[in-house]
Length: 320
Image 1 (cartoon, rainbow, N blue to C red):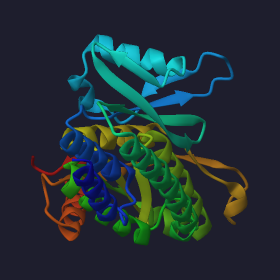
Image 2 (image 1 turned 180 degrees about the vertical axis):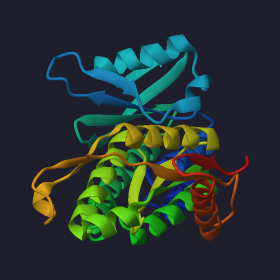
Image 3 (image 1 turned 30 degrees about the horizontal axis):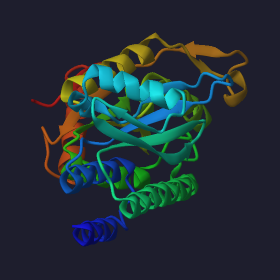
């Protein structure tokens, strides 16, 4: 039995060597533990350092997993972590916490349920900790690489990064069935503004609109300058309705923002000028509206042009 578990563990580790997406690694590990060791799906908790003797505990990537745990058990586990009681028994079931590692100001812990031979548990613990360290290293490398993926005018991500991120989102959907949406945004009548006031003013307005978009979307949403006066938001883990709401917030925020035409950037005026802008927005969802990268880009782009053709200053959404 022990030999069989060792073999299964080694096969699992080999299969996941090249995987660097934390969500996918966590899901595959949970499935492996549940299948091979007949235990509940592992939970993940985070302890937040709040400079007191009472750390803040929150669940982390647990979502529907907690349905497997009675409320009383779940609360006891959180309480045990708060007091650093890392081995305990609740209603006849044994639980062990594995310290995964640090992520910013929080420490992550994985909760394993069931009986594990000591050698197997050490191997599991070593795998969890080393894999998380490698994921953090990959994340830092990706941060450095992202510097080459930033648009030098707006500070948003550029088109190269956009296409790479869509491919990653599609792979994540294939693995975890988490849908995502694209929101295409075009500034209305921008060419007239650019021609009338000059490229320095045009650049300044692009920067201001980019900041409006970035400050309006959700924390996990990714913002890009697609080209010219077009922007894109990739909204992960979103439905068509979620993305429509994000698009409407952007539309409303742009309309209500007063943008500045600075006198020092324009030859023909000595005073700053206020200007109001509007945008046309197109929304599409993967996989609701497409089955590939070019399809989802094309559909969101078409919806944006549909918004422009039908009067501008509105959000058009692909059919659900």
